[in-house]
Amino acid sequence: MARHVAPVDVRGELARADARHTLPGVHLVLRRAVLAWVPIAVAATGVCGVVYGAVQQDLRQGANDPQIQMAEDAARRLDDGASPVGVVPAESIDMSESLRPYMMVFDTSSRIVASSVTLHGGPPPFPSSVFDQVHGSPGQDRITWQPEVGVRSAVVVQAWRDGYVVAGRSLRLVEERVDRLLLLTGFVWIVTLGAIAAAAVAAAALR
Image (cartoon, rainbow, N blue to C red; front, side, top):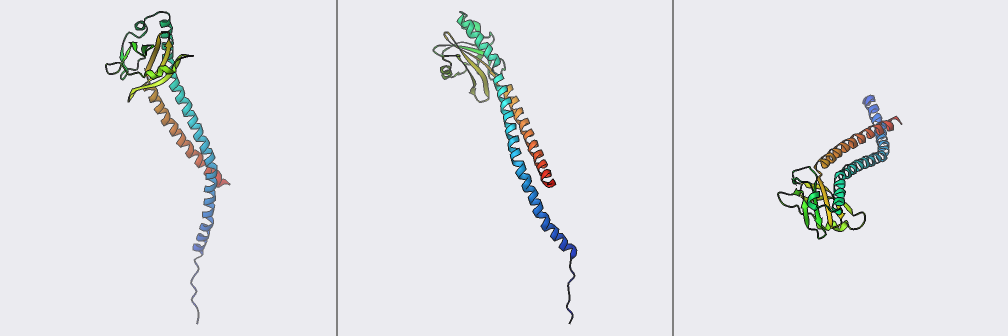
């Protein structure tokens, strides 16, 4: 009695054989790509972080420059005999609203004796503990002062013969620039990682 022999699906067998050979090849390419991508991605992340940190610090430190001049000039005039009222700006501002620089003069007891700044109509509560850091050479400290949420100033504290000069300015514009810098750096970082990944896959496939 003759046996029935099923026809062999040659195309199907070839396709399955190709798949068995292709899958290990794809895994090998991806593995090589990941091994090449990781160290370069780490380096790119470090470079983006360093660039962001350097530019951010330059923006923040640059925000102190006008106040340094104001505080040092005022302290020099006070040491030469000028009155505290005479060295502060004539027009008073509200630090929660204005971007203009301001100045305060304190005596050795940390009591305010002249000021060109207010906060909601009253004197802002400047922390007297800052004055403890100004004693000795060079007699100056630079800080970020936040008397309330959303109100931040770049402040320079300068010692003079009978007390301290405080010169400040709002950080609002600087912080807006820092926020834009963070967005730009993050965008460049993501695009760079994607480009590195594509290049790593292409290089691994060519091998």
